[in-house]
Image 1 (cartoon, rainbow, N blue to C red):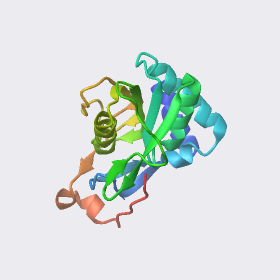
Image 2: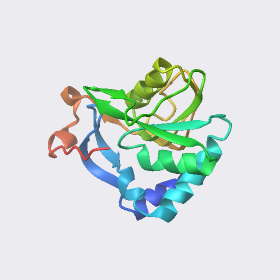
Image 3: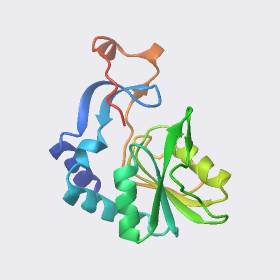
Image 4: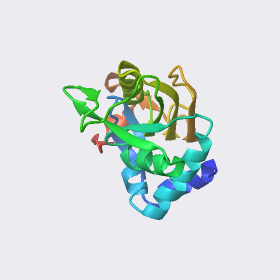
Length: 187
C-alpha cells in the first residue's frame, strides 16, 4: 500500500478525525487516527495486514505481540499473514503484563505490532515486557507513525504511513485548540 492508499482508508472509514484530542500520551493534537473505525471491515483489515506483514517480513519472528487495545486487530492479522503465533499484552496496575497463560520462551524472536505510534510509550513497554520474559524483539511495525520517524526503539521500526503530526503539552496549547473542548477518543 502506498502512503496515499493508507490515508484513503482512514478518510473513507471516517477514521482520520479533526478537532481537539487528548492522546494516550497526554499530549494534545488536532488530528486523531481512530484505527478501530478503519479496521472494522475485514477486507480492510486483510489489506492493511498484508501490507504491514510484507513491510515487516525482514524481521524474522515466530511470534507477534501487540499491546491491547489498539494493536489487537492488526497484530492478529499480521500474525495470520505470517503464519506466526499471536499474543497480546494487557494493562494491569498501570503497566503491561502477559496474562491468559501467554508465555515467551528464552530467545524467542518476537515482532511488536501497534496501530498508531506517537511517542512510542506503549511499544516501549511491550518491548521491555518481551525482554523481561527472555524474548528477543526483532522489529516493530505500525500502521501509522505520527512521529515521522523520530521515535527510536533500539530495533528496526517500519510503518505504512509516516507523518509529522503536531502535538502539544496541555500547558502549551495554541489558541485554536484552547477554544475547542478536548475529547479523549481512546486507542
